[in-house]
Amino acid sequence: MAAENQELRNAGLKVTLPRIKILQILESADPGSRHMSAEDVYRALLQSGEDVGLATVYRVLTQFETAGIVTRHNFETGHSMFEIAKDDHHDHMVCLSSGEVIEFSDSLIEERQRQIAQEHGFELIDHSLVLYVRKSSDD
Amino acid sequence: MAAENQELRNAGLKVTLPRIKILQILESADPGSRHMSAEDVYRALLQSGEDVGLATVYRVLTQFETAGIVTRHNFETGHSMFEIAKDDHHDHMVCLSSGEVIEFSDSLIEERQRQIAQEHGFELIDHSLVLYVRKSSDD
DNA sequence: AGCTTAATGCAAATGCGTATCATATTCATC
DNA sequence: GATGAATATGATACGCATTTGCATTAAGCT
Image (cartoon, rainbow over all chains, first blue to last red):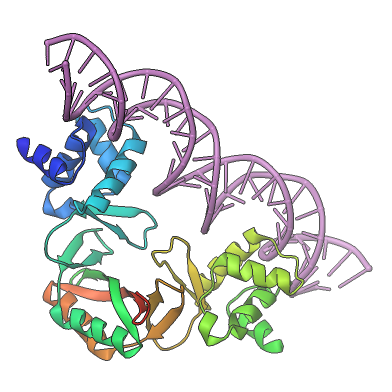
């Protein structure tokens, strides 16, 4: 319980109830739903009985992003998705049937991307790779 | 000039002035500015002296997308970008300094993606790869 | 040309996200 | 533990890109 407090402190953020709660929600999300939209987090808060405003959720998520606590993804769905930042970089695979999001990482692709940018006279700053897939079985 | 008419007819779309004009603008865009937002197209229309509403531009672009005439991309910039659909698949490199969009294609990455999806028990339906880069010189 | 249907233009509505601002809360100091 | 300055919060207004409703206009068949 003091863990979140410390994490916030380390990030230079004041320890407030909304921030603790949001951090807990993000951290306790199981693998299948690690990626949450601001609305998702907001709904989770309400279900936990916490009375936090949606504006605060957006603010806190943005602060967390700046602090490196969470990572923001803009999938083609139009709205941002957030997930607890992990040390390892990874890309995403979104199942078009179930909406499931699977993480993966491939050093071959990573390296190739750097090369390609370089070949065009650019420096690779960031990238976004999302595979849209379907279960091999169910067509 | 009849070329656009035929293309629209083939797509099952009524041949209207806005549609012809928008198609022409997209087709005549030079390589450096192949990717246009709805606003871009709208401005181009106004400059051509055409009096087309922004709503129509959005509607037509969406219809074109459905018809396979254009492809829509959702870069992290927040608004959709459209480009005339080409047969060959390609990915994008967006310069964070200039906004310039460069197209590229890499069979190595393409193949690896298919493999990765398969390894996870999925079939690769589509993907989105965008490299965010900066000119190697200007830091 | 006339008529039916679909397309357009405008304006208002939407949806996600951000900014404003008065109030409440944190946290360092006493 | 109380006090006060600084920051965070919540409600709401706002901004932006895109969509929608609806009256008007244009397309295209006869």
